[in-house]
Image 1 (tube, rainbow, N blue to C red):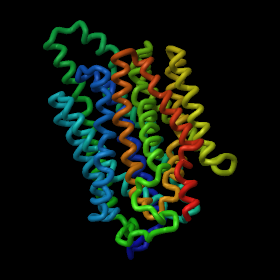
Image 2 (spheres, helix red, strand yellow; image 1 turned 120 degrees about the horizontal axis):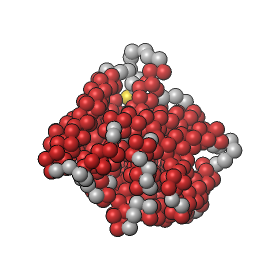
Image 3 (tube, rainbow, N blue to C red; image 1 turned 120 degrees about the vertical axis):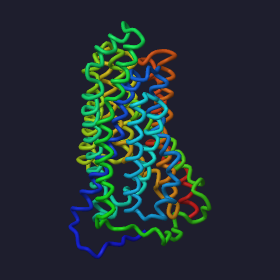
Image 4 (cartoon, rainbow, N blue to C red; image 1 turned 45 degrees about the vertical axis):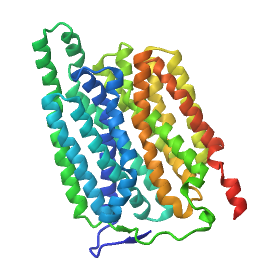
Amino acid sequence: MSVTTTSNPTSKLSPIVLIGILFFIFGFITWLNSVLIPYLKLACELNNTEAYLVAFSFYISYFVMAIPSSWILNSTGFKKGMSLGLGVMAIGALIFIPAALTRTYTLFLLGLFVQGSGLALLQTASNPYITILGPPESAAKRISIMGISNKIAGAIAPIILGAITLKDADGLKARLTQMDLATKLNELNELASRVIVPYIVIVVVLLILAALIYYSALPEVDTDKEDSVTETGAGKTSVFQYPHLLLGVLTLFLYVGAEVIAGDTIINYGASQGIALSAAKYFTTGTLVCMLMGYFIGITCIPKFISQENAMKLCALLGLILSVLALVTTGFVSVAMIALLGLANSLVWPALWPMALSGLGKYTKIGSSLLIMGIAGGAVLPVAYGFLADKFSLHHAYIILIPIYLMIGYYAISGHKVGKQSLNKSL
C-alpha cells in the first residue's frame, strides 16, 4: 500500500486535524444512541427488547457493510469514499425527520442503520490514514489521540441531546399515566418532534464536512498494488487458516458488545434504580470519561511500563470484578460499577488489533475487514441484554458481562497465540 500526495502543498497539521474531526464525528454520532434508547422507549412506548433495537440497527450495519465498504473504496478511492460515507450518514440523519413527524419507530431504526452504514464506510477508509499521516513509529500515539477525540465527542453527545430530548422526562413519564388517549398522543408527538432540530443541524454539519473532505488535499492510499506474499503468509491459502485471528474476531465481537452495554444501558439502568432521568442522562458521559482515563493511562504506560498483552489481562480482570460488584450491589453504587467499566474497556481495542493481525502478511487487509465485522457485537449483545432485562430485570441482566470478560482474559493470556506455534515451525 503506497501513498499518493496531491501537488498542492499543505501542512501536515491539516490532514491530521481533518481525520481528528472525523473521529470526533464517529464518537458523537455513535454515543447519541445512549440517549436515543430511553428517549425512544418513552416516545414510541417500547419494552426493553424493542428499545435496544436502536443499538442493533446501528451496529449491525458494520457486519453488513464491512466487505462492501472495501469494494466501494476500491472504486472511489479513500478520500472520495470518506466524503461519500459522510453523505450517507447525512441521509440517515435526515430520515429522523419523517420518523419524528410520524412517530414511526421502524423509520428511526432505518435512519440508524443508514447512519451506521455510512460510519462503517468512514471507519474502513479513515483507519489507514492514521498510519500514513506521519512516521510509522509514532502511529500508536496518533491512534490514541484519535481515540481521545472520539471519546470526548462521545462524552459530550449524550449531554447535548439529553438536554433537548429528555427535558422534564421524569415529569412527563408520570403525567402520561394519568392522561386520556388524545392528550397522551399529543404529548408523545411533541416529545418525538424534539429530535427534528438537532438532526437538521447534524445533517448540515455532515454535508459541510463531506465537502471539506472532498476538496481537501488529503493524501490518497494506493490499493492497486496488492501486498506480495510475505514469509508470515507462506503456505497459507485462506485467512481462515489463522485461528488467532478468528478468536480475535470473536473477542472483538464480545468486547464491543460489552462496551455498548456499559454505555447505552446505564441511563435506563440508573432510572430503574430510582435515579431521576434528569440525573441519569449524564451517566453515559461518566462511562466515557472513565474510558478517556484509560486512554491516558495507556499512552503513559504502554509499552514503557506494561505490555499490550498485560494491559488487556488487567482490563479483563477489572471488567470481571466490576461486573460482579454491579450484580451484588444496588442503587448508585451498582450504577457506578457499570460506569467504571469504561476504564476496564478502554485498552482492549488498541491491544487486541495488533495481536489479532500479527503474522497475517498478505491477509492483513481481509483480516482487518473481519475485525470490522466483529463490531456487530454492539448490535447483538445489547438486544440480548434487553431480552434478559425483560425476563428478569435490568439489574440481573448484567450477568451477560461475566462470560464476555472471561473470553477477553482468555484471549489476552493464550488465545492470541493459538496457531502461531505451528506457523513458526513451518517457516
